[in-house]
Amino acid sequence: MREADEATRNSAAGFTRPRRFDRNLIVIGAGSAGLVSAYIAAAAKAKVTLVEANRMGGDCLNFGCVPSKALIRSAKLAHQMRHADHYGLAAVEPEIPFAAVIERVHRVIATIEPNDSVERYEKLGVDVRRGYARLVDPWTVEIDLASGRVERLTARAIIIATGARPFVPEIPGLAEIDYLTSDTLWDRLRGRSRAPQRLVVLGGGPIGCELAQSFARLGSKVTQIEMAPRLMMREDEDAAACVEASLRADGVDVLTAHKAVACGREADETWIEVDHDGVRRRIDFDDIIVAVGRAPRLKGFGLEELGIPIDRVVATNEYLQTLYPNILAAGDVAGPYQFTHVASHQAWFAAVNALFGDLKRFKADYSIIPWATFTDPEVARVGLSESEAKARDIPHEVTRFSIGELDRAVTDGAAEGFVKVLTVPGRDRILGATIVGEHAGDLLAEFVFAMKHRQGLGKILGTIHIYPTLAEANKMAAGQWRRNHISAFLLSLLERFQTWRRG
Image (tube, rainbow, N blue to C red):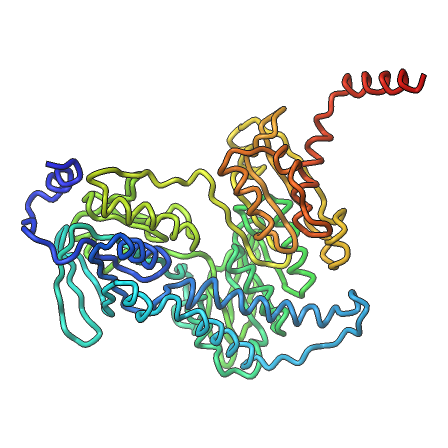
């Protein structure tokens, strides 16, 4: 008996294992993790069924990464028009046909959509079913098809990739008002001739900051409410301060250390009440976006009925296996990170372990996880932050380079931000990097590559970077590290040698 089959048999005692299986793999959810899992299975010539109840492409394509970045681009252009004098042109107040902006968002989604479509995946060899899937036993999935028919399929392995949804906090009165989330705003704002006049954004994380800045630049009077003492608590304080300063410059009224305690509607006004150090105030608004985080979709898939532990996420081991080794989870539903690129990364491990785990299993690798917040300026990070290193008492050195010293940043009018690199004391081995500035998410890739392949700052310093480019910032940071570690004794010897050479 193979090891994986034996483990599954032991955990599934009390269930009758099918003698034959309809599929090698069933994947529940067609977001990033589900699509990649199904793609890998089809490429490995496995018989795979992908089940999706909503839209192919999941949250990223339809509600998150794609539409938000399209909105950010339009908002940034409006901002540049207002500040065209910064580039030697005449500044103008842009006319913003908001309906056209939102239509562009939907066109962008439609342009990318074929990459994640039913038709494409069927051509790849994936059996795609539209409907709601529920686990009946460790090998059987019941599908309530969109046609109204109910179907049951068995599979040797199953991957749960059901994603996440916006978390809505239990604030008195919130459920009674017409709030928006990152999932609903794209359809709900469609057709409006102008952006919300008075907009409250509840939440100071990446989603909240991106949306607050974008809507402010598109003409909304934005109030951003965050319960924590500052924005972007996962990032270093200096990085978050750059973003907050930019938001305020765009006209966002940033209220940190303010807790939302109630919402309501009186006459023609909708309001939210906040508490700050025991003092309460009401803020009237026309629209509110709830952006306080996302919660994994755990309910309705039969997980609890099978006794699969779920708390904040589906409990998995290092191989992404649940209580039943043939049932795996990947993406937001599995944690520990809620990023599209991490979901795709996990999908490889989940798919390979599901298909070949009885021969060889692979541990999911979270050692080098990058991410970015696409505000203006962007904030991108990989590895340790300075605050994390201090909190965990990890020995480290900090090297910092100001992007304002970079020629290309000056020519582009983007001379704000910094590159900050944490290294092992006395060595160039990179522990983490944070970049704040124009295209920070793109610039970070060099540090991600270096950390993944265990290359230090010396290798970055020894690499030719095109002049003038923003990418030189990474080399400049490496050069700063080198200057910080020049031996005073060696410099003294060099000076004496050069003096001797002059005769």
